[in-house]
Length: 428
Image 1 (cartoon, one colour):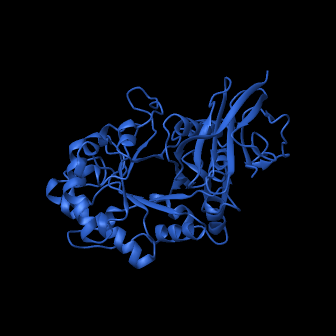
Image 2 (cartoon, rainbow, N blue to C red):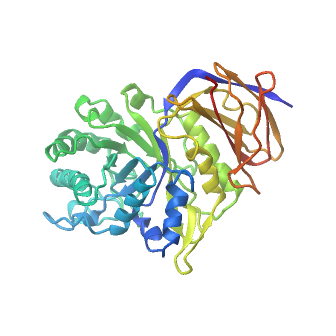
Image 3 (cartoon, rainbow, N blue to C red):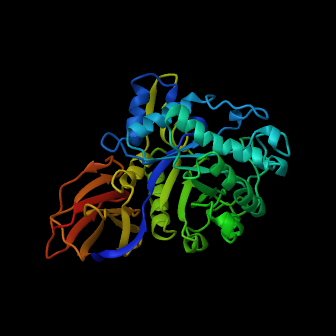
């Protein structure tokens, strides 16, 4: 059964800042590989022609950068520096850095792990660490952070074995308003954007106090959250708009998600995250969407690419290609445009265009076990044709045959369990 879907050129939604990945503490997973393998991995992740063109890189501001009061060592993690520099060479235009935990000496539990809070008497020292990292990475390594984030998963549970720090909404508001804003200005890095507050699941609750405080709100540029399941109910929260953040004129990013308890390199995982991207683009209206890691060691689903240091080899997952169906073809500065985002059961459609060049991209996810047939009707524009790029059980973002219009409609067939990107250009 055919379904006609209208794509509305002049129905402009949110601007896209990018699609990205983190390496954070896993930068060594790439850096420690031999050449030319590590450069190949960088190409696959960040080069738009040779790979999937991820345009946002998320690194880490490590606690080890400030091991004791007054002592700083921003050279501690050259693996991260190398990956950031190489990402920039391949066209990444947004390098961001998140802190997982302040140094142990600043915290109530004297540890970087298992939660604990930043002691109020060290708020100023922590602001100096964050601001100093921006300045030193710029001066020492030529890396200009697009944004920093003051915390990672501040609703952390105390049992977590990795670096973490707990923050409540009052802590966040006070730190932004009374410490970070002034210190960034003092160190001349006030143009760097600030992200808040990256909780584990999709909620803007922890940033509401700061957003409702004019002085704190002024120092927030991006409101971000992750998309992990809420532990008590073991499910993700719906991809809803952060309305307060939008009302305050802030960008909204989804900055981390992965599948942590399984191993699936195939289309089931690829479709899962293609649908997640779709939901966050069309329902939460996010400006950016990031997967947890680009490359990670071993057999797990926390990365787009699995790497094996002992043999200098790697494996590309269907997750990698499904992510690429978005990241390679929807570039920073594109805007989403209106369409019917669920034209039939199991089919998810979103559309985007470049306001400067009149190029456009349509991504369709077919989660059905059967072929889906759609007629795309362009409203407010026409095009010579559509070029599809197909990811399914047997194809990896492979170019298909161009589709020409019939009576101003484009008839498209979507293979079962597939992610298909259609690109074209508006006729002048």
